[in-house]
Image (tube, rainbow, N blue to C red; front, side, top):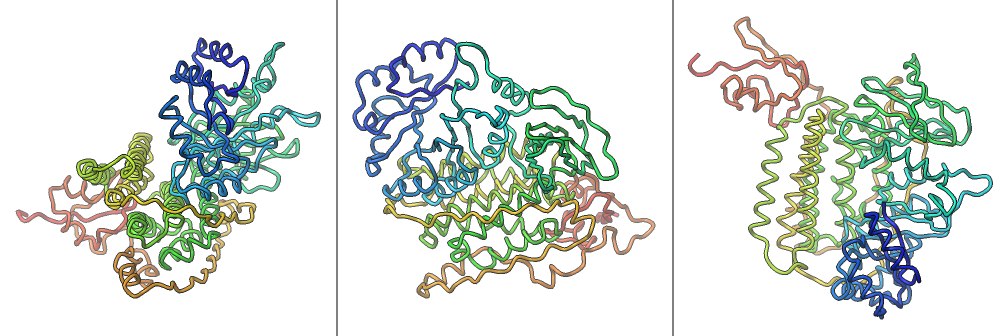
Amino acid sequence: DTLHFAAGNTSLESLTDEAVRLGLHFMISLSPDELRAVPAYLKDFASARCDHILRFECGCESIESECCGLMENFRTTVCPASMALVVKDANTFSKLLGDTSRMPARHVSLVSDTWPRPEEVQRIRYIAAQYGQESQQIHVSCPSWFPRSNEQAATLLPRFFQYRAAAASQIGVNAALIADDVAVQETMAYLNGLALFFSGQCYVGSPTGQDGVNSLLFRKGAQWLTVLWSDMKGSTATFAVDGAINLALYDAFGNAMKLDEPGQRGLEVPCGPIPVYLTGTGGALLGRAAVNRLKQQIDFFMAQSDLRENLTPDVIERIQKIGAEPRSDANRLRFLELARTLPWIEEQWHSRGLSRHVAVPAIMLISDILKTMAIIEEDRGELFLEPVSDTLGRTEEFQSLYLTGSAGSAKARERGDWVLGEVRRLVEDAESLEQAGRKIEAAGIAALAEARAQCLKAAARAEVTNESAELVPLPLTPAVETPVPEAETAETGALVPEAPKPDVPAQDKDKDTAKAKDESAPVKEEKAAEEAAPAKKDTPKETRADDTVHVVVSGDNPYAIAKKYGVKLADLLEVNDLTSKSILKINQELIIPKSKSD
């Protein structure tokens, strides 16, 4: 529903007239010369069509040092539509940012004569964070691509899903692939099939690690879509879909296919070079895909030496343990402690304890890890102590404090306003998940929203500084490994070995800086002895005949239980040997303490 035109196209006005008539939006690409000296016809055109222009895409070759100023001037004097920076790869993007002190645009268009690797999208996202931009929108296009003699139009689909899995926002192709002067092309039929199933889903992970079979799982709420394809015809993918409902299988055109009942080995799905779509609701497949994704996220995090060397050892150790034991009962505490590091990192950045190219990527990657962990926590089935409403209530208080206390120029509020927008997005996600019945994941996302809201305090006090242009270390992408199916680990009971701890060199800082860092460092984990201690039994240690016993059900929390029976929360926790960090389990029995009147 979006078209792309070059500003120098001689038929620009007539083509865009037709696009406006059809209700379409479009993008306009500008050359460096057109950006530096805007032609008169382009000013008139942009002013008349500004409401329909989604963004301008600008190349900055040969004008790197002045590109940012030229973009701002164009938006001020010609059209305020968004601007996108056009690059051919991540290295070009990094070099361009090294020549300027500010991020020129919130959008990046990765344009190449051949399809770039999906890892390039991931690297650009990380590089943007190194320069302080956590919300970079990345678009991928290959205008010269056409299916060759040995290539089918359907090969566009795997690329689309791989780029979406790497966090690309849009994928662009030559319009002639969809329709020409003669007829609608085959690609259009595949895009129609895609539109039937894919709309706003977010990537979860790969649910299987079978050799020769590719699988990517996306979801919206509890409903999920798994895309399957293989290099060879006649392949079969096997899934453990226990707990899932509404299972259905479709071909790439959107036609329903026969789906056999799950057997002893699981659900077997035939696949080949043309993708097929397996859909369903809920079940364990979401958790298995998230476990595989979590390993990839932590591998990427640990591959960045800047993060390992500048964050505190307890943060690094906690992340390593999460990766080594993705389903451990101890991960609930690690989740909460890791969330608490976010406002600390934000504070360290603005107080000059951490540099921008360390702090912002760390916040971004840790947030990604926490979102994936929330999916796994839902699959494990252990309730959070506090209800979602209480957590979101505190989050709202942090937002109100920021809004009533923020002042200064728009530039001074830029970081804080973006964090505020991210908090609101997380709050919406938590509320949607709760409505979809995923209460545990909703509580996890609410906890992340609260942690990001606490970042507003530091962001509001941030000083406006012009950080000098610099070349920062390029992100390293770890070697791609075939993910081990989580189901196999569960069946064999094998333990995943803990990743080796990196050597964190001592920091050459003066005593005052070291002391300040120690005082503001996040709270460390509970003692190792407490972590290693066996979990308490789900039933009270002593139950008398006249005791009132409450059996925990989905959605319960200590506060609600205490309120239901009219007793104090502290008494309820004490009589059941619980603490504020204890986790309730479904079917767990709790003794209700007797009130004073009894």
